[in-house]
Length: 409
Ligand SMILES: *Cc1c(COP(=O)(O)O)cnc(C)c1O
Image (cartoon, rainbow, N blue to C red; front, side, top):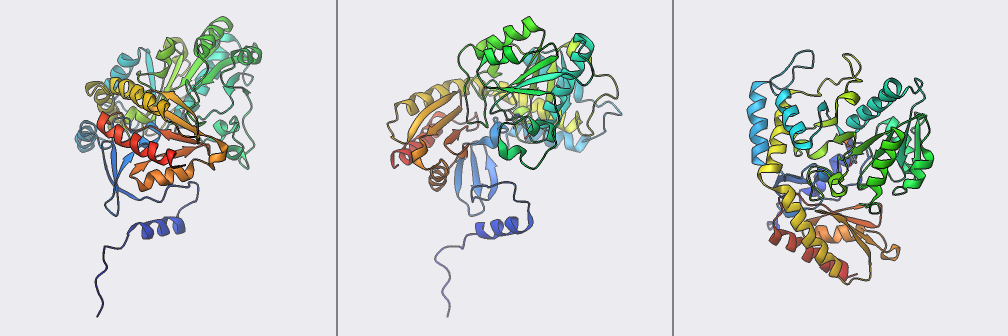
């Protein structure tokens, strides 16, 4: 006679085994298999519930499966999903209207992934340099920063300072000068008559939530104005409420010439990205210069409108500011010898551990066991970035877990 098992066997292992066997090994995920997600929570295939404190690298700022965004997805998916830009569609204009209305930029160029929007900005800057500044074709340079993360295309990884992102993937495109992040003097020294743009993250996310020194963005703005260089802000991760303002640049009262958005632009429902600029810059693109089969499709446009409306209607930006201040206050009071620094803005907090702590991964694994999903970044930093719909009692539960794990050593 065989007794039934005391509890149902874990289904997780079988899922992990199949992915391991059949997929490319270009990620190293935590061993949790998500089956369902809602708001600030995800549930795994064994029915366990977790707080999602990664929020898909800020793509899910609006919370998982936001009803307003899902309603737009369902509604639009029954009407039309993709017609290509060979024809107009009735959703695209509304998307432009909402996005320009919220950000104050004059024009939008819609793409799909973040890296594509960055590539679009690079093209815009180079052609602007040729047409508006008289830089010779093929000579334009863009200043970028150590620690940057702008995506994974060959051009973009070509100017990464991260050896692993580059190794084996060359040859790379020329035309980029990399300087230390936060160092305005180094930017000034790198600018030549051939410089068309400075490409910057207002806070570097993948580098470990690195906040530049106060005044840095303003200094960049002044430099770019003086030298007639475009300031291009990659707000794919820092934008759309994450830092407690709609755009992170707003903290410094800075308006870039080119704004790059992605991730939360569609609330994690469908890939939508965009490059925004005013007329003189955007006008470098003429029919046939640039495009994307899926870019600007009606399904993506409808989803993005709903994602932006949800952000505003549910006061998520304000919530990020208030709860971010609360989290920051609690973590700053935390006495844990493993913690070197707590930094960030809004609901985007990096907890950097001392090298002697042996890396952030084991703390993330301990948090996983307590029902909190965090992902380490750059080995020693725990990144805390929950959906902006998280409530204060929920956030306190997350902070309780983090404090327990960090004080346990
Ligand atoms: C995620 C990210 C990108 C790339 O976006 P993808 O959609 O993954 O291509 C670019 N820039 C920043 C700052 C990002 O965080």
